[in-house]
Length: 70
Image 1 (tube, rainbow, N blue to C red):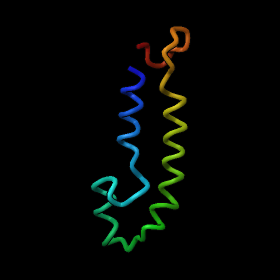
Image 2 (cartoon, one colour):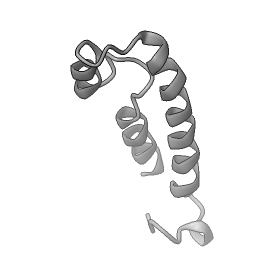
Image 3 (cartoon, one colour):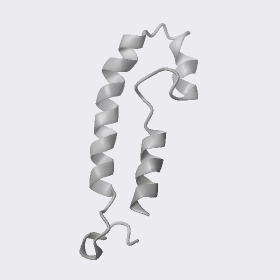
Image 4 (cartoon, rainbow, N blue to C red):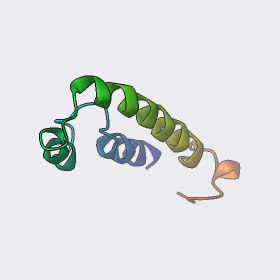
């Protein structure tokens, strides 16, 4: 089960490119953003999301399952 949750976190964390998610594409053209803007800001958001996911998704050890008891 922790592997499934990790895949769900990874699938929803697509901040690095404008084609990663629909709203990224919707603001890409009208907002005047460039690819470098997505790379600069999206990389930080991806690292932050990965760190939070590592903290929130417990390993498969019984004594560490405090937040989500699988």
